[in-house]
Length: 149
Image 1 (cartoon, helix red, strand yellow):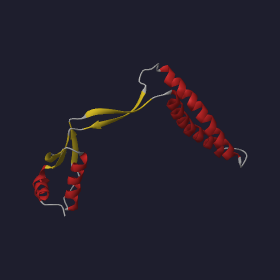
Image 2 (cartoon, rainbow, N blue to C red):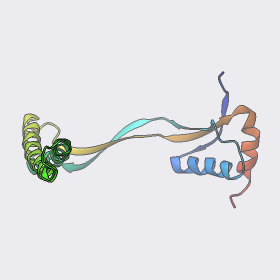
Image 3 (cartoon, rainbow, N blue to C red):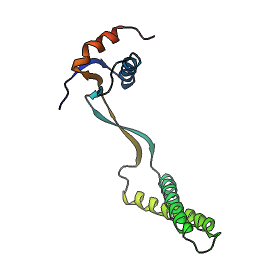
Image 4 (tube, rainbow, N blue to C red):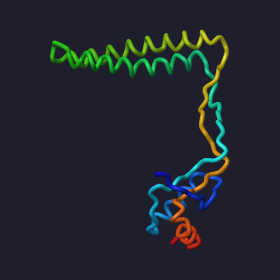
């Protein structure tokens, strides 16, 4: 069974739309099934730093250290000697960091100067619409005319 929904408000930010749904909820409105829909989506990529060999090695070392720590923990759990788990954990951490740094350097060098930057991607909407079940739209409009308090 499909539910018909209709827009009751449109906002420029997600936070404003979220406040509207919170306001409706605070006043006993049945918010189950309410939608906040981003309209006019676009991808935004923000450059945050330049990728250097040092940064590539550092990030590779960090990810390698995590992997090495996991492997060391795995071997440590099944170690025959009771106190060996800490030693295996530390060796896994160290060798993981070394291997990760080497891999990070190689991966950066292979790119050959293409994409020499670090960025963060996100989806952004032009506007956000709050949609409610059609049978409750009149009540939602009524509640939105009431001030928050």
